[in-house]
Image (cartoon, rainbow over the protein chains, first blue to last red):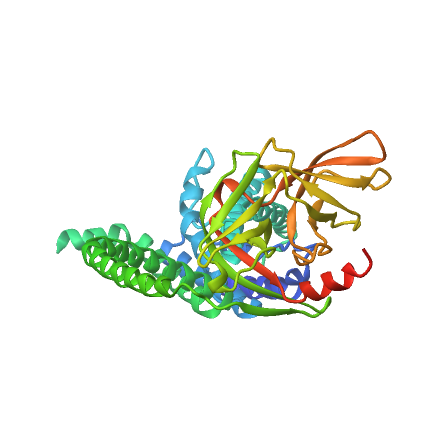
Length: 168
Length: 273
């Protein structure tokens, strides 16, 4: 248990650093900003209590907000992602259900399943995030384009990182 | 109590979500200037919308009072008009034409009789020699050519319209300055004819026609109308159909323009005739 908490804390710190130091500096032409920190929310154990999930989402978003100097934006989006995660997991549950104590990763449920999962979650998160950022519905499709492109990049990076995540 | 607890337990997920999201939105709205402004604006819009509705209702309810006030105001304004119109003699106001060193004097008058359907059309204005009007003064309507005074009595004057077959006016094409003589052909009160423009001059439909000031009656640059059609006549001249800027059918208030130096100019010119 303690081991797991330690593991996730380390993962959390690593992801935040990766996001802040590397991915926040990737901005192609104002359309693409990948946000891979969502991976932390994605990879929390399936059976985590939802209040803890929400609190951790809040914490993650808040930390990113601190670094991005955009109070509330990432927090709202990540909390929302944390809120919908249980429902998404229920909808796309594998045929024989989740095993207790497992994380929803490629290792456990396969590449295609994880890709679907990550794509849905990232799309939800990015949609919330980008629309909160522009905070209006004029230029709706331009924002939508940003959401789609950024999601594409985020998912790519998340899958990539997921492949090279060493089991600690 | 039990059902409340049940409710809380069942929806604790949602409640925590709402609380956290509420906090996040609080950060969002207070921490970012842009989002803050947008939120404040939309709140303000809603508030103003509601207030607007309330205000409309309130206005509607007080229409009776407003009507009474307006009626009272109407009465007092009517009285004012009576007082003012009894005097009737607004003094000439003086403007100095600094470019041509001509001095024109202006006054306004009201048209009290008008005709457009004859060959010799005249209109009557409600000022005469007492108010300083003289024969051969120019009449313009909203700075468009309307006619010239031909006969004055003490309190009234008769002016010859542009749409009178005896009317002659020196007018030019504003764009290139070629001038000709403007007459009326007795057909349509909306159109006059500009002649004596030579055929080598380029004329376009829509060109502005204005007065020249050669007649010593009209100041220079008063609008006559626009070219609506032109054709080549026998000889070397165009026959240009001019859409008059003045609507003679609804002539109501006119300006009388007097030229203070006209006598001087005419006397000088007489020496060479």
